[in-house]
Length: 129
Image (cartoon, rainbow, N blue to C red):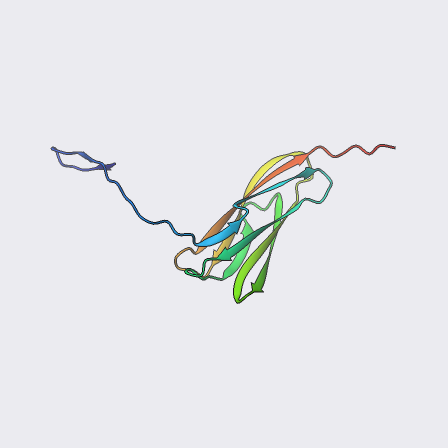
């Protein structure tokens, strides 16, 4: 809806159509870290640039960083580059959280990619004797 200053037609509805193309293949599209408090909880996200929009990842960091640690590894295979982001849970207490990993790229088309990370930390398992 577009608002104008015209007295005859102050509101105009616009319809926009176009093709949506993938900039990169991201697997999974959101990472869920679920496990028991006190145990290692680690997951990975793979980011593969689409050949039409090649880019390099220059920097990676969690937006908040209080509950997760992220490391990136560049992988070359069959003349293509992909990035493996390993995410480690830092939360010690049971509870939930959400954070975003920010990937800074060298692309003018998409200089930043955001990766969603959800955490669900359960009560520590009781040790039986």
